[in-house]
Length: 372
Image (cartoon, rainbow, N blue to C red; front, side):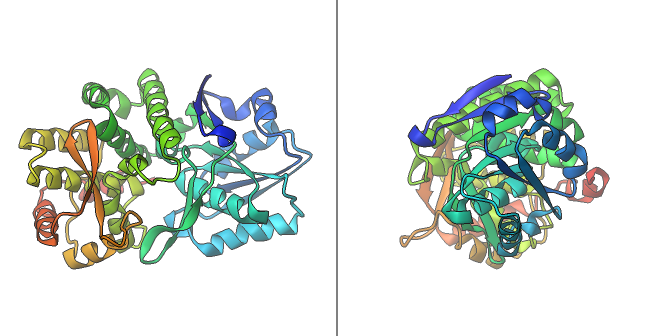
């Protein structure tokens, strides 16, 4: 087991990384000391890991709520369902909520914890690659609005993150690939050397080599923890972590939150951000080709056919990074160096989107083969 620290003063917390941690009662006893525990999970994860976690938690009283699976569960109605359960079972302010699942469960569970009695402890137990390398770290919690992703939420830090890397063994290939989008994103904005390492080891990662995966989870948590410690509430540099997300969130919204997985939409967004950076003179064609090649090797899309550009631009205008001065984008000065800039002219964005939607790729047609 490895331990990293997210340094936020009195809100600091550890990230524990290692195989088999879900069943380690001694480890959990130190992390979860509340007498009342509510585990929030979903119908996919529960049959795999809920019983193991329940047996390892030593709380006097514990309950579980099993939600339907999917991004479409990130609603205020789901938050109300969780709050109803906490009230029904008489949970007090010193209770603890445990979010067992991927990014959707983590976002929902964290937001519910932030709301109940003005805030109770919660623990992140991420079971997908995307959650382990990104969404479980940093305290972003939210649900979606029909017109904009993650529009309703709070910055609310967990008391710890328990990352059991064995859970990746049961992850469907499509979900695993979606997590690699966030891995590639971190390398592009923060660490050129890590990007080069990924180019050389992407086949090992796709094959789920244990050593490569262990390194990737640890390195991504290091990068994310450092930037969160510097800018907890995304008033500055932390916004770099949204590379590809302005485009990607708009795509998810247009697709009704069920056409693309989050990582797939982010991958398309990364490709669009790279091409926009090239149009501004920062990246060259070779840089864009390298980025798109790595995304493709990871099993990810780089274009979104049949997108209505006007509607995409309209949804992008709702992005949370927008201010009274207008939309901001995260782009690339070079591979390994992200930059937050005012959005280029709409005509440039329109041209980039229209050009990229014509990129020929077989990913979309092959999705059914890799769906769980």
